[in-house]
Length: 395
Image (cartoon, rainbow, N blue to C red; front, side):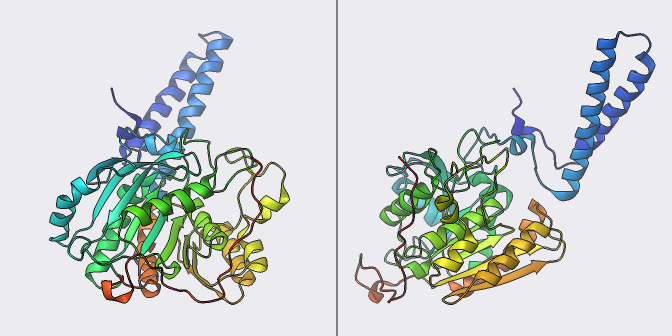
């Protein structure tokens, strides 16, 4: 049986076949119009209209590079570990067993992307996640590495970042060129199932899933416990595209003792209220304000460096970047960049990634060598980093 993820949309055949089908239907409808009953005419007209719209959509998708397969369009995948080198099972229980593979790849200058499922004890959420261990991870057993949580967009999943955007490959190349230090990348599923029509925006929703808790407590806790990573906030970054960009900024501002860096690629500054997302805060303005990037910048600034990008063909995202830049005051620093063209699609994402990675490389510290601090001791970040006391959803 053919799965939806095997039906390609990023090939010329997709719009050509649909256009040919539409033409046949239109000609057939005209020829049969006076030979069928009213119900048949209605069905032929509806079928023709649907196929014409599908052909137009397929053509726009081919030009814009939005969805590579039907599966990515509807948010389904038979292989959530696509783009990874090995599966380490529930909660990464098989991590030690794949270390020889990690070492073998590292010897050739390659990082290793691993797939797992993570149970969030604090949030009650169970989801897929990918972990990318950089070249050198096994060669330096005493070192602790900086971390980037790289968040997919909607309705994406970890394989969007690992297999479609190929972020681990871009990072490996930048590490080899000494443009970014060796860094551990954690790629969580921010949406869960059902994927299509289920946009949760990484927040602790009122009477809904506690995605914020999953991403900033459960995932961070697992990473610190099971991987050799730095625990100081200056070595932790969030990055993402579209809804993942909003999530990166919002979570970093809400949890300044965990993160010091945020990269938003074509993100926005507040959660949408539409048919896909719904009203996440159930009419509670305090929760909405506590997840509004501009409101947080104005009311609760913390030491944070942010990169906010958009394309010239993205007016809404450019407007959000302008609002964010205008709201930012020290100790927050905001670097905004507008790329030529840069529509809201995978082609723009991939074209801009090297620039984003270079920005991270200029801000992330390198691995912490054993002599820099005793094992298990968090590096002191100094004063000025507030502990957030924000409103929380009702139980």
